[in-house]
Image (cartoon, rainbow over all chains, first blue to last red; front, side, top):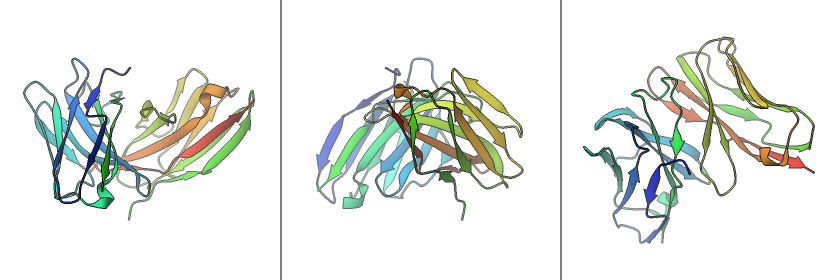
Length: 116
Length: 111
C-alpha cells in the first residue's frame, strides 16, 4: 500500500459525459501527478500540481482539467468523453516540488475508466 | 519528435541468471531519467531517478547506469528471481518539463 488513494476504482460511463476522478496523496506529500495508461499509448504523463499550483503539463487534452485543493487532494475532470478516453488513470504523489527533484513517486491503485 | 525506446520489448530469463536491458532517449534537453517497475495488476513503482552522466544507482539486486552524452541507460538485474517478473519502464524528462515514457521491457523469469 503506497498511501496514495484513488476513487472510484472503476467507472463506466457513456460518450459525451463528464466524470471526476479523485486522488488523495500520501500524508506530507505536496506534489500530485496524473497519468493515463492506455493500450495504444502506454503510460503518459498528464499534469502535475504542487501545493495547489500547476507545475508541469504533459499530453493533457483540452477536454481534461485538474486541480489540487487546499487539503492537497486532487481531482481530474474528464469531459465530453470519447471511446478513446477509456484507460487506467493513475495518480502519484511525492514530497517535493519538481517532478525530478530526486523525489520518489508513489502511485495510487488507479481508476479504470470505461467509456461506452 | 522526442522518442524513448526500450529494448528488448520482451525478455525471458532463467531464474538465477543476470540480465540487462536498455532505454534510449534524446541526448539533448536532458534533465532526468526515471526507471519504474510495474507488476501486472499493480501500480507502477519508482525505482531510480538519475540526472548526472555516469550516474549509477543500486537497489538490492537491481542497478542502473546513465550515459547522457549518448542517450542511453541500462538496467541490470543480478540473479533474477520470480518476483522480478514485471514490466520495466523508463521515462525521459526534459528541461521543458516534458516527460516521455518508453513502452517498457516485459521481463519473464522462468523457474
